[in-house]
Length: 154
Length: 282
Image (tube, rainbow over all chains, first blue to last red; front, top):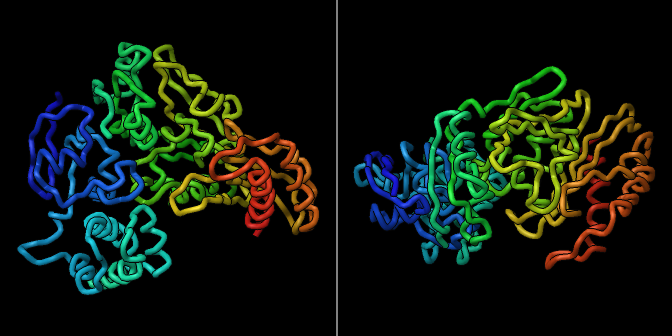
């Protein structure tokens, strides 16, 4: 077992983990933050996307021990004082989801896209979302939500 | 899928990392972004007994102009390389390739050192490094050695790295005044390339004087299409370029898989070479 200290959504957590524990399972099972989903479990679908030191990553392909001393933000960390993050609000308003399974990962990826490109075109959003799969929506409303969320985030 | 159990250490220097690796024996492996190694471990295709995490060694993260070549620290991520200012002229190829790897999340974690050391013939950077007459620097307990890219890739997931060695740097030629491009063909976004072509072209007034063509996923290692390169030298028309591209059949018969037959791969390579050369010259 390894002792790690990870700051998740601004709160520092000390924990004992097996080195083989994947970050997503640490977040879900040890911290109880189940907003981050496990989809494909093979770094393809993006449902497990979180931010590691401010950059979007697939938490099924990061070891919890690799996050030792680092900062993680999950979907639970976006809202402030009960108010949705502009990107969450945009997904709500544009109906950027159906079943909702991919949504936490989509939103975390979308926030990352806008961090790197504050005013993305539709084509840029579609390309930058290539690591996130949605099996319900056909992406149309998701792309609209990201563009709307980008404008609201300025 | 959870990997089989292993020990994990995080060294604070390269020297410490090399010591940990040599003490860890043949089953000890270095890890950085983990985007090649962790998927293998989860499928239990790799079962290292010890992972030495070099991801925090900041002195392996740089892109430097060394005069006659560009030196890239092994820990540079694909995301960082995609916008590296030092990559101009023909070696901009590395940036063009880096931005086509995986997806944004993968590019934030994956590193050039990991991608090259993994030696997957379907992976993008190896063919680019080969086309830029690159080399890798490997550090071991006994010192450092420089291995030309042409001698580095030995087969699928097999490289000239010895157990206990860490790939610390990738070097590529600058190719001042050259144009470059990476044409990648995939069935779906984020897939591995079925075939891809890295082209570095020197031309003047529409006449090619020098061409380097690297091929991804056309053999068990990345390869150069030397017959095509020879035929491209002096080519000054679309017809001449198309004729040169036809010589890609000289590289031999690529293996078929569920995505493409051998014939289709050869066809793709020929078409992609034509496109790559045209784009590199424009």
